[in-house]
Length: 400
Image 1 (cartoon, rainbow, N blue to C red):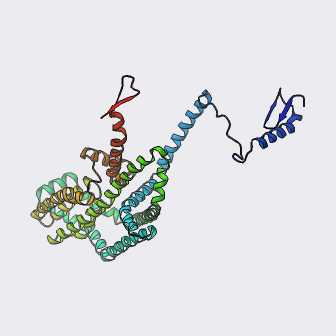
Image 2: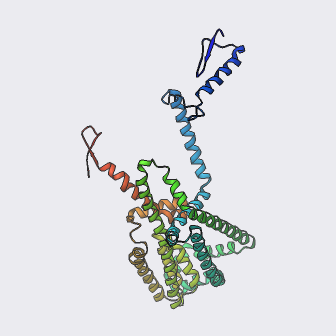
Image 3: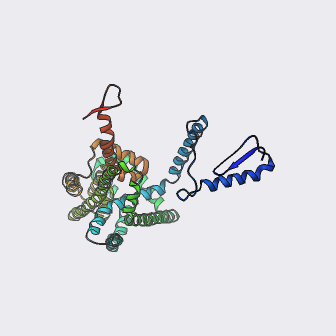
């Protein structure tokens, strides 16, 4: 051909090829493809990279980065509710891991161990609901229906309550709230939505927790594969320490909450405080929230105990103060050990931020997340910041 030549393994054309030369161009390219295909590289070896520092590539990379970041942020906002369920299930799976690992070390298959844990939890929950669902409904309905009467009793007994109620118009607000809640249509639809949403969320979290727990070793290995091989051993040590902190906190917090609820139930029964079962369940739920949960529960129960007598209410306040001290200085160190160590200031800030971002779930998970972040800062950031370098700032000459 006049304007091009083709050789095995290398082809080039001189000048601009014409339309009639297109079959020859493809034939030459096929010959080159056959030449570069070897047993070791059947699809050929990669060619020269694009110039990543060209203005075009830099602009494209910057624009793509902005688009991806905005799209990812939008995705997080839109999928917030689903992500909360996934995060809750993951933390529950990590919390179950100490029990599941203990069973697997005693020659129990992992799937069987997860099934045993779930069956035990379901049996305990079913037994509790079978024994307490009727009293819970009755006491909960009674607590709502008798709230105006209890408030009037407190107003007649204690002048300070009467003046506070008149100033805040508590009677009117309470009557309006009860009338709104007991309206047939609103109450039925509202209760249906709440029950359906709670059941759906519980089922989703349970299924995800079972999946995460059964496949936890695989998930753990997959996470560590993202680290370079040279840094993978240290990543494993730090990651396992984080899992231990999260698991110890979740499991310990659930156990402490259960103990607190049982002790509170016994106290309320001993002093004939009404609605003891409902209030004990309320304590168990609120005690899961760090810092403010047990305090809020104590205030609510002290107000209900005020309907019995002022001495009983004051004794209940003292009981919750003592219970909080026992929980912080006896139960938590014994059950959780030293797995979770977060300064008080960091705890407050973490709970506030977690509650603002993810609601109650964020407040519940704030402390283990803060503990994990503090561990990363201690092991990765502080050593790098404390490293002493020479005058050029390039070569480390000492380390504190």
